[in-house]
Image (cartoon, rainbow, N blue to C red; front, top):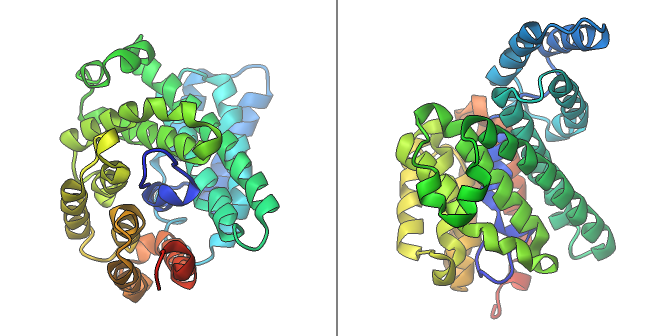
Length: 329
């Protein structure tokens, strides 16, 4: 994200890539067995909510089976099935916060890791198709956001209205155990705002809520999710002064994210490039950051191989279109 007046799919890079880092998609034998049990529990008329919650907790634990994968297309194709299964479980335990948070995260992941990414790739050659995919990513992101908001209400009654009035004060009750919920709430709301873009400027009014959620999560557990929160803050601070952004803070969060991730993730480099650096129209630094992202070996951090490949694919696309992104060659 860069200019406050026009957030779009290309401006939420860190959400696009970070969301894939914690995915739990149905393609392993263990996952398939769990889903079979879930279907049996919900399909019989004697649903045991404790058993369903046990299944949901197991699913929410995730693992690196997916994030270590080397085939993004396979994972993208499996995600709709996973979404349907998670929602089937929620029908049995509609107020179970861990499952609400996980479902929220999956929708956000799919909306921006795959659908919005495809929309961005088609912007130049097939605008109509790109627009259709962009609209779809908005619907998916809003659906995910709604699950996170239900989770917030489960943990903090009345927080929806409180966030509108005074986001920082509303989140004072949150503790370290709530960091995942806070992060995904920020990511899903930011994703919806980004997907809305110029067609839905009314969504931008909730940007202070995104910042408050991310900052509270950061204060509670800076290293959560392998540096996911400082990386998110690069985008938060890239919004310009009108929305409370700061280039200096964005660069500090960039340095912190790189440090936590030991320089093995291309995410911070692409986030900074598409944030404050593009806003400044600094073509040389933009290209340098993307080249640094592409120089990272996915095999150096195999547990996050998938997100590295997805991020690097976007970095290549941005480099190919650099002449379209900068006013002067």
